[in-house]
Image 1: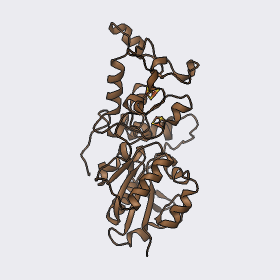
Image 2: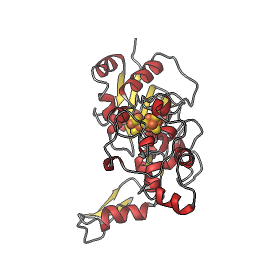
Image 3: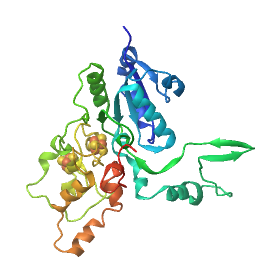
Image 4: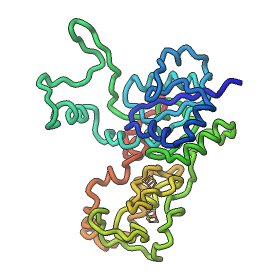
Length: 322
Ligand code: SF4
Ligand code: SF4
């Protein structure tokens, strides 16, 4: 009997999602036994032409990580959509835009200026920036066109399931692949982790007082954190109230506050939810006091929307399925 065919592709992301597949340790050997990888550019040498030659729907599951930021990424995910029965937005970048989508607060021109022109370590006397077409030694070269906006995967193609995390945790990956490969398909559109806040499973939740009050906001390196107390009760911002459960809270266990990588709960805007949670506990009776407390957050957009700018109220809005 032929094995299920699986593809993995990496777009605008750091590579951690590809790495996370290897982090499932010896289970990767079981997985490699059970499936045929037909595309995994990070690990194996397949050609896109091999994928183009497949029948529509021939790939059983494609795991797509990263948002879509250039025309090359758009082309390959559209091809994979045609060739795949199931598309999984793998990791928070594919689902919500992730950290790279903070660029949506700026634009392509600003990004090129930082990366190719103004950065002190860059030497670029010709002031050249990437172009879709350019000439070199009489030959025309073509590169993918970089978009002005970073798109979530479901802005570009139809997505069947979402696996959150930056990157997804090993236990979540094993469960999700077990379900999908075993044919136990949840309803289309399911986010494959519990739709409750991280606080509800966090070991420190019971230490929250009946009435929580934050008189200031401190950064984690400014205090010696009590390893058992809720971070919010220690005046340290923790994104737990606005973050989806399912990771097993490794950061909290390591005495670091949650930064929100599992993304929001269903139909919530993660930043707005956290701002609303803070609004209820900040101890400021006038505008000046509130401003002073909020000044303790040096980068509000990067704090509240670190993993979700492209999909948030803040991110540039755009038409679906462009
Ligand atoms: S705010 Fe953070 S530390 Fe406190 S209960 Fe929620 S996840 Fe745990
Ligand atoms: S505790 Fe927060 S930042 Fe850490 S893995 Fe879980 S969701 Fe991500």
